[in-house]
Image 1: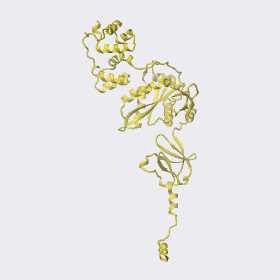
Image 2 (image 1 turned 180 degrees about the vertical axis):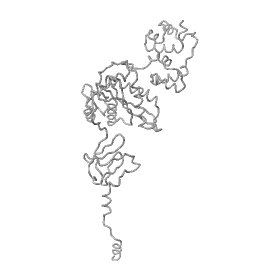
Image 3 (image 1 turned 45 degrees about the vertical axis):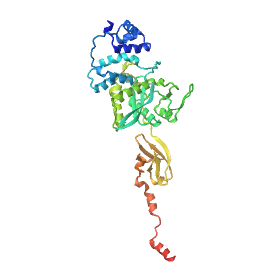
Length: 398
């Protein structure tokens, strides 16, 4: 009956699995045939000369596209289903999974020891990046992913930079999304959090990251050097977002539009998903973790950029390659500038806010509030003015 059970595609798969050292019984299990059938196919070195009468499948016209997605690392059947539905596929997900399932053993991966944590203990954070059109322009999108190690619930936020301020903002947004704070945050050894981490030594953390940790009450932890897979739960979600969210949504009207879609996708798809490792729906597992999270602080941590500046004698301050006016009594004085992640500049004299401006590119010109320079103009107009007759008299005398 062998000739009625194996086709050319089956034989190619058998060869690939055998080259990888997969046991014959496991290959047979994947294909749903007897191990002797697999053994005879390998000894023969070619597909059987006679095959069962081919049966067409609704998935047949889309196998090329499915294989392409698998080669790109997209193994989520729901994502693949949407892709081929857009191309006209009218079948269901079961027949699609039947086609994908035997190929899963070809999926690349590395063995690792899984480390599980109790509820409320740990959050893992990492960055990913991808290029997609925003407002019609191909843009490098950076997204920070924060994953609760116990429940696997995660949050991500997209922005244009991976610097310290955006890293801290992403963490704060994650805490706010979860409604509480874990006991420890595990980071990679990026400089925005870890200044130095030598093997066998305790890491030296960035001072501002320590300030953030103190504000929210979590203990900072750093992954072991050269062991990024310590944060495997979070890194898998980076790939999940790339191959799911960014496959479903290909372009965005604005950064705001992008993050609005991300929040909706988290609620509608990521949170309700069944997690194969913990064998549970993520949102339901989170219900047990939520009561173990610490309370959010009364005041949000300020993630804005802060610097000191000396105001010019013309009562302008230089910030982000442009100049912005301040009240003229501050000319020559030291002020504090604060630029939030929404692009608004705040200028402080000591603890007092004196002015705020929306940042704008230098090519659009300096940003000026006329009232700021009223004293300077009065002084300029107060310069002694001589009548022309004085100069006439000087000319006559000479």
